[in-house]
Image (cartoon, rainbow, N blue to C red; front, side):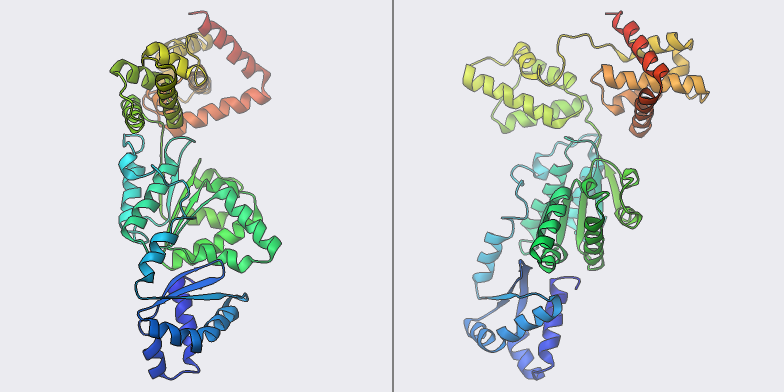
Length: 436
């Protein structure tokens, strides 16, 4: 079974074995499938008269055909006339997009760090199932992946209210499967996902290493993909970095388009801050917006949290919004008032420790000692400052975020296994802090 229409065509074929072509054409030529979930098939016919005939003469045969196809008991619901519009408007998004409020393309602030992912999401929402399928959006937590995912769902629902949209988090997909196995309702579980027109999976990384979950997702993916249904997935890492993910799933996730979302630059952070404030009815002074943008660098959720705190200070304490109130609002988010070294100081002290020039560390030399010093400098820039990965890369002849992240991870691993590296990091850090 590939889609709702395929299932309905199979049912009609079964009915056609015992009915004449004239009877089939009379009662089912303008009868269409509407929904299939939770072991319930919903169909629509234009008139009340036809509904009564189908209900009285063919309902039992239809539910029996469904039982034969899926080895489960089904209920048949027949809509007539104008009931279809009401059904679609009331039922489609109640369960599909529980977090949709506010997550629209209109509320998404576009910048260099997310421009590609945003454009891809817009293209998918305009032409679901025809371009970029699957669309795989990845990046660190709090950068807007879920916002884009739900914006796609909201956009498609607005344009195509009859589309069946299923939104699920990776860990909830596993929980659904466990529940279905416990209750003996695996077929209902499969119908829920495999009859979708749009499948939105948030944080797919949580299915890694879970064999039965991956097996079900593999078949769900194949069913929807072969039926031309749109699949959109988010993750905190690209498929190649999910080491416990089955190869057959990894390759399928890479069939479509991979779009990464990076931490926003200063201008985008300031735009996001203004946007969040406007949504809450708050007008922030320019110096406050700039201060927030300069200090909250890696996470959009933190920006939103700070703006909400400022709103609370205004409403509860009748406090004027100033740099002082911002410092109070972000004191639990970042270290305000403590010494934060510049990248130049970090690179200079790392170069001095290793007996190298700053130009060598910033440059392209692959000599082991120089490469290690460069990785240490990147690690210290990440741990001692609020710089995003992209901003750190700019300090080293515009290396990309993946190179910076790889260097940081390598130093972290060495610190776990090498006392010398841990000592080196402590010594350079001490020298850097002495510059305060």
